[in-house]
Image (cartoon, rainbow, N blue to C red; front, top):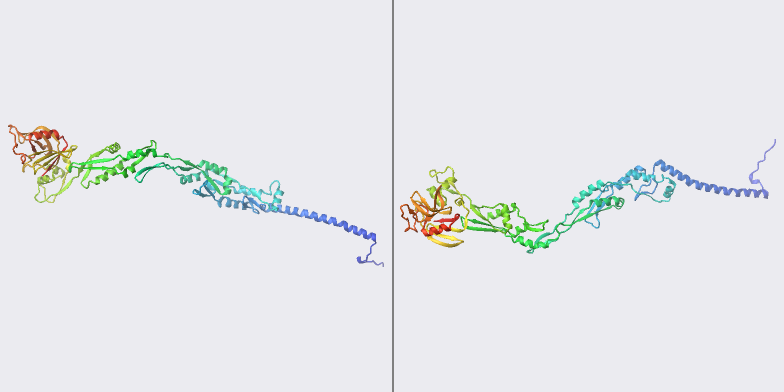
Length: 523
């Protein structure tokens, strides 16, 4: 049997030549190793990059450091990106809108109120498209170098929404211009200069919101543009003289009380005239604006000064009153006494009540339906007509005839002065002359009284003692037989109710006393 030789490698010896070959072989293997390592170093990043690309595609991620302006959306899916964009750009963001250079007019508004809307889907798609464009390796390499990839949001502008918001703001922001005005200070009128206002310029602001939409959204601020509104009236200084002229108007009303022979005069107060002073913006004319309701209120207040039982009558129309005042004329009216009441006492008759009240008996009967001379009873309340009922004609204010029954004397007054005095004869006790306030109503050169068959020269009727029967003033009567009565009795009661004068005085008085002159008869 043949035996195999096993030689342990440690026992081997080599010749020099052979050792050289062995060494050369080992030296030749070293470059190949480095080549392999270098290849691996190149391939591994490529493989890693390929793996990253595959991962981003598989998981639908954005590249890291992808920025939608200042919002990092790296490592997010399009759905996550859209949700974040919607919240950050559309809902959480506010924009401060205000006038340029002013801190007084500032409003915090949502983007939607200014018509801005970031399209979350389109913006998310732009972020997702990074590394999925024509040169994805460049985007990926930028990401590996931690370089940001900037994406701008896709922004839309809705002009109609912005316009609606601006119109709402304008209602609060618009400041009307203030016209020049007048003021009363320290006892003098001054002219205050007009002040400009402003209005929101909606069209200019809309143009700014559209052209600078992205800047406004990024900076969270927007400018509101305003237009200045000049006042219609800037200066009233030239018309201060007109003011003085207008305020110089008195605005007077004069009321004469023919019963009491008193005159009341009222004038508009300075405060009232200041309140009514107006400027016509078209003509720049100053005047008093007198409205009927204002005039009525003033006249009502003046009427209160008369007290209870008296009112103003014969008032002109409001237009005439206002025109008179503007012409600086005095408005003249009459004071009227209202009806009164009288409670009948024991033992009184209608005739005694008539004499006491100065009201003819028949007028009392007319004012109290159902009353007769036979059914009068104590305790009854009678209505006594207004004493102005006895003055049916316009009153002559500057003339007055005073007759004192107790003195049997007549005094003729004109303009507050005594013109003449005369002895008279009034009615006898069975047919007395009534006391009261009456008026010259008729003139008859020679009246005839059939009841007594006598003529009454220069007769002036003053009141109806009974309907159709007029008592009056006249000269000494003449009987139809030519006999002149009562010439020797002047100064004592003698007539049947009339007031008798001598012939010359009666003729003079007849010519002087026109209809309307007041005749005041007292006891």
